[in-house]
Image (cartoon, rainbow, N blue to C red; front, side, top):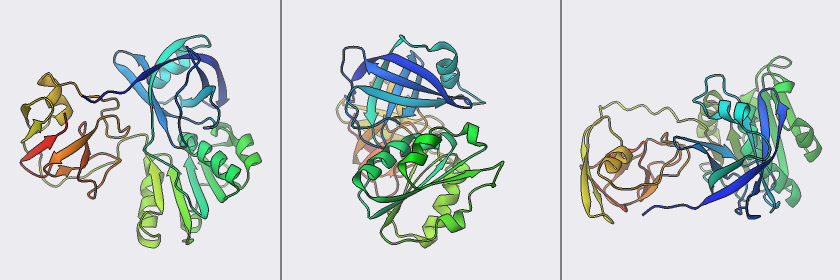
Amino acid sequence: MNTEPKWSVTVADIRGIADDVVELTLVGADGQIPKWESGAHIDLILGPDMVRQYSLCGDPDDRNTLTIAVLREQVSRGGSAYVHEHLSAGDTLRIRGPRNNFPLHDAERYRFIAGGIGITPLLPMIRTVARRGAAWTLHYGGRTRGSMAYLPELSALGDLRVHTEDETGRMNLDTILAPDPGTLVYCCGPESLLSTVEERCATTWPAGALHVERFAPKPVAHAAADSEFEVECAQSGVTVLVPAGISILEAVEQAGISALSSCREGTCGTCETVVLDGLPDHRDSLLDAKDTDLMMICRSRARTPRLVLDL
């Protein structure tokens, strides 16, 4: 079955680093922390029914601590409010991961674009490329300078371009995204920023040049209503019917089959499952039509009447 180890960590420090943003420094409760690479995130297990994903924003070369930064969301499902109101130094937590759906690839140059708390997965990347001596530029947007985390460190690292709505207005993406052969674009932030960047890059940049990370599900439009289909769980020897309005994850859980999951929104990658037969209908924020042998069962459905999954 799909399993993933949990790690016990202690909150070594918690401090405010911007308006409504706190940074947590985590150390292994037994002295051990998992290895990770730029772009990775962890599941922070805050309770039996409260698991949230946060990008690691420390230094991948630091083998002693893990660092995350948490924005207190105005409309919170409970996770960010819990971190801000209840966690303190000395508390022990469980984490799962790290998991990396946003890896840093080699390139001649990099163009980073961050909106608000979207700076968190980009900061380790910038540290990495700066250490390598690669050319990079960061365009970092926010409401005010006080709302933007890590400005002093980013400024010291190199080519930082700050765009604040109260001083200069929003980023001019037409200028920022002028095509540049040999450059990779990495972007993270609110959906309005990501969708605009994707639209610009789709027509002017080579395929594969743009890489994005979403904190919320990507809007997916489907003209046809959901229809039911069958899922054969190859490991379990069980076939389940997935009706309209019920996810594959929910259907297999109701059948007593254990499947690892976390966000249930198609953004974290925890429920990634191998497709042995049939064609998936990707409705997550990570995979696309070329990925026919994998699917996120919390959101995606089937293009064929039957799927065979490695469950």
